[in-house]
Length: 242
Image (cartoon, rainbow, N blue to C red; front, side, top):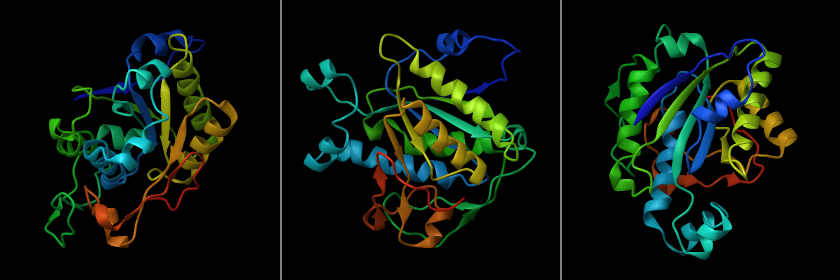
């Protein structure tokens, strides 16, 4: 798993610079990020579980992903290739540590122990390697994580950054990249901007969030799947800031 920071482009820089750096295949997941590790790893662990389980319901869930030729050839579609995180300078640098969290056993509820918070990049990288391990059977063995700095208090600047990334990805190749937007994590400004950019651009295939029946699941690195309420839809509404 490769972690890369998306730096602010120079004034007047073209979107082609982003396109060149982000050309690859698979689903691109865009999401906000605060101090909660589980707000990112929880939803992704659930998607990985459904991708691995691959029953009729799961195949139907991912059936709209990929290109028509891939589906016609019965290739697996819907796998995660890139994760783009919109977060603050303090989170990226590690000046603001993560919240403590629970590394609960996969698919079960744990009451502890709590893992002390640390630098987000290092902590999240370790958690994602467990969530998106080879056992999840994703087609892509290497998943890139990009860090995009935003100002959580400046909605205009944040919108400009998100819109630029979406426009750049939509312009890659002949049909652009397949984009999913996760509204589970990030603060209100980031979530609102992601919704606006999704609705106005028309370039995002799916906007989703997941919600756990038990509020304590927000501290989990993995969600208890039997109790997870599927709230993934084309245009879902966010629940709360985690």
